[in-house]
Image (cartoon, rainbow, N blue to C red):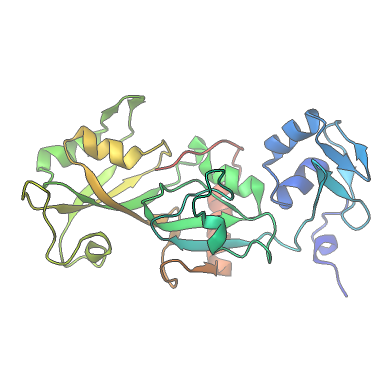
Length: 278
């Protein structure tokens, strides 16, 4: 039987790349693990960066747990429902997104970025550490589109401020595409209750579509608050070239070959980095 990894010319491979392909960390994160003495190859600690391994014969472990490279990286999208924390484990015992994806089938799966516990929508998972971290790097400017149910109705002036970029407590936010969405929009009903709903003061709510390319914590909520409108519900329907299609709430599906190609093209040349939530 042919070996896809050998056909791809991946044997032997640098240990950092092996750890990234196994979904343990980005290559830069793998270097930190190696420098900390947490990586062993065939039982021996390996700290030298650039060391190579043969996945067919060598046993690699991190903190005593063996790591394995899949024949090819896996990518899937989850329609995250509200009430789940975007983490693979939670010390407080809250429901996590790890419960919604096939971690046993694809060891090393991890979410790319985060969505707040009460935010719904598209969450990308992969076993490819380098691609996952590259997508979050500021240099990639990966766009994310959100639909927000907000208190009150943003004025033309409010929307113009969002498009120019508003000042937040941690610095100015980059300009965002912003628009009111009417009932005719297919995205309107994703966050709006029947009848449109009203705030506690009786003021009608509105639905706003917002596209950002940063990944700061609670960014959409803070941007809307900066122009005087509290986010009541938030949903992400697009991440880079991906749109939330073909999957029901709380379910997942693997990306198509075309979607994988688009994601990898978006990430081409990316550098590992930490990512925030929106």
